[in-house]
Image 1 (cartoon, one colour):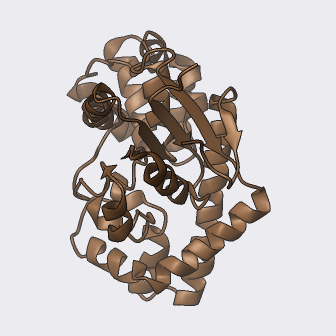
Image 2 (cartoon, rainbow, N blue to C red):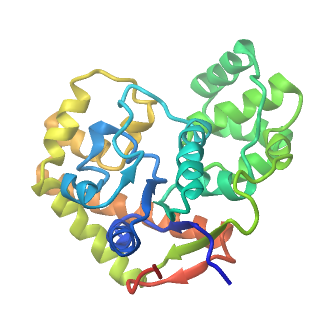
Length: 296
């Protein structure tokens, strides 16, 4: 049986996905397509451990560093950019590897992307005001009565998703989870195969710690300083990248570099743990692989 041309490689940060992808592409000449929401941003090469310029020159990479930090890319915008690239490659009988740690990107491709109508400015403003004035717990309680399925999937302190879910429920009269359930996969059944890189937990956490050290040694502090100098909204996705908040404390004189490193390492481990949990719950039928890598 012929293997599908489209391969999805998911996994937590610092697990070695980029190295496996590069090895895969060098062996078969395929296209590596970014499926990580933070590696989209040109301003975050160091903080997101984006493939180096040398790696990008060694194999064909797409959708890396294409967005400005002032932009807010959504899942929908990413799929609109990714699908034509996938179609072009597979149309030439060329394999494609989508690699990253953003579960919602893979979810959209394999389960569908909901076409949710705009809830209206009034509903958005009301939801945002409720969050800012009454706090997260009140918004969660309200959302739980209108859309318990959506509320259960939104993590702590995720203002953007909480406000949107409440605005959709109240503005459209239909829960966001109901809109999302009425969807079709963007990739056809049988056209893809999915893998999750799931290293040993101790090895993964050691990799997270080492990555944090490497980030600081290769210019992460200057990268954050340049980002903060732009005066961008803290609500933008790029400003929420792991490392921005932690290293900003050094720039503002609130912490030493050593103290920030400890915080950065902890934040990176926490992020990897959340990713592992998401993939374990959402992709139980995908093949689990280790450092040995992918078949060509």
